[in-house]
Image (cartoon, rainbow, N blue to C red; front, side):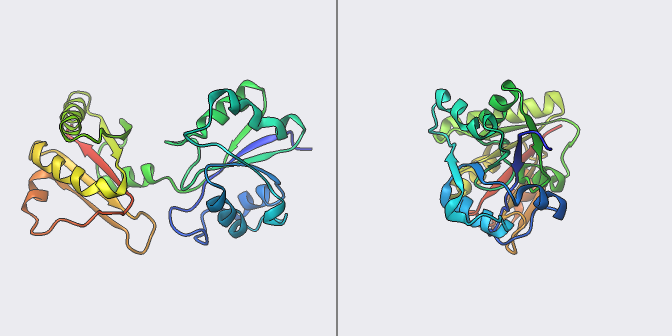
Length: 237
């Protein structure tokens, strides 16, 4: 028998019906009844699309998000302690990468249970792959500051880091602030620094533009990024 296992289950970057798991991976999770999820409504749609055998309303869904207290994470592995395997889902993409699910993975290892990551879409990796930037040395910085002056300072620091360490820098922004971030980046970065903006990855509206800042500045019209999930990739090496 398979020992109690935590399966890390990637979810589509687009709609729930977009295929993202291989057949043998689906076979590993369709009988699960216990899941830790970032948002129940989204998770139910994904689990239904995966073909989970138990009726969706009968599943045991526990929530883990940015509001979950550290002391409560340990209680989430009770299904494992009871001898049942369970799954971890992020809102979109790979769980535990730029995602609060990492806390559960750490707790699972600490308790001595098996962790199995499944293959699936990662917007971070897809953007890096498509950027033409250095894929041998890179760092994901998450969200930049929301205040304009602090954001500009951070952009300059990331550019210096990229140049000195030959390290690609990846970061994101809340979709409604994407346009402001792009405007600031084009205003302060060196003309030869490569900037890639990867938007709506895996969707029919996907757009990936990767070129020096100088070329960005020469564009007659910048792409509209408002309310569209985007990854930014900076490389000055």
